[in-house]
Image 1 (cartoon, rainbow, N blue to C red):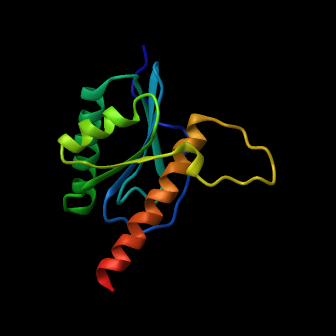
Image 2: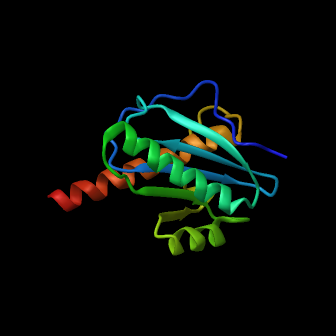
Image 3: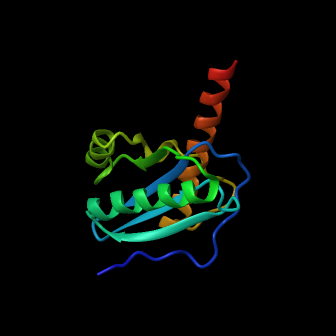
Length: 146
């Protein structure tokens, strides 16, 4: 059985956050959740849940929001991205029912460097999913304020 665990070495990303951004790497045995939250020093955090643990995922989301509010002093919405596949669509429906903004992407649509072969890991994929989500949120915010 897996327990929630944070990564030892979070990755740095430079961005002003208006939400808590989350990517989900879903498999039958475990779910890797990568988050980027306001007030966390621009660092990605990761934790693992047992596959199918929706209650644990939603509880983690509540905790992420509580901590962000304690750090910054205001409530932040969640924006979640996951790949189409095994659990992507039903998780999207659950998140949508909970009022959480959720996006499903085709795994082939995530840009990767073709110059050299890269190792495929859920950790790297979790980080790679955050980038287009941030770009989309930034473009949407610019369009609203234009």
